[in-house]
Length: 427
Image (cartoon, rainbow, N blue to C red; front, side, top):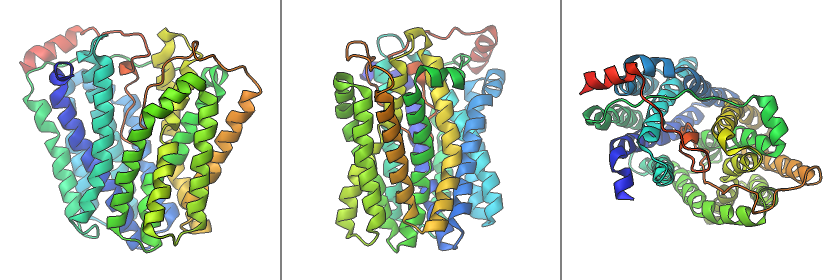
């Protein structure tokens, strides 16, 4: 493992710093906006703006990367994300925050395009599964554990914004000091939406719903916690427990889906997630220990939704088409994530803070019923016909890295003449 990841350690350090910053910023923003009595709809719009910028950046930023090279481009993206984060502390204007979040989303997407193309360049057919696994773990861990910083600083001040700015700026250091040259970014192809729907309606529904439901969940969770009178410390513990739950269940649920079918697992996990979400919505004054247990179950059973959707779709596409299919599903997740926070905010304004979990419960139930409907419409693949399950987190900052997924065919990117020139210049 150490030998496999050694060439990408600078990149992994950059990931940890970026994810830690993002985990802090999102949580602090929600708390501060709720303290200022900003409407939940407007708060949702602010977080949707991040995903709009992120999706736009993931689709367009490769032009800059190809023009100046990975290291220089990463520096530009990290600086822009740092500036956008610091500007959140400079002004409290909510509409300015929307602009800053679009800017931050675009810059973070660009940084992750650099990171993932770099990882893909250093991966081989033998070690890419291990590199992919380490990438997922450090991404998940840093973003999930960083909100524990709320236990050491007041979320109502600007200190945590400033710390996040420092972390984003520091992410440039490991890559700037590396002696490794610029890799070549490959052009990413996408399945058309219509083709994806025809290939796997259930997979498309799961991936889009994952963006719609969980994309905005953690964005609006601080608003829910603040509104019902719980403390930032309790919020930080909830997020840490949710991250731990998501990590624990991925392989057991994946193992079950590999041996007993995707759709039964999708139906079962979403049924449990829906029940937990509706129970939390119905009992907002639960003792914190009970809330923690129910939140653990909720996050454990909803977290594999995106990975199950990708696996369900991959069962019906050729291995050579996996990367464009996965990229298309990632695009659908991004579209759902752009919409989700605003819709959740509107529901919370209309129903109350419990609308967050009511929205999740109803949404998970609808997807489970659709998967049940599809059971009677098309014969499922047998376990031998299925591809293997691969855990993929639906964390908002992860670009997807479908090229690193060991289920797809491996194509090592070739360096173009322009990339070679940039590599020689960096050396």
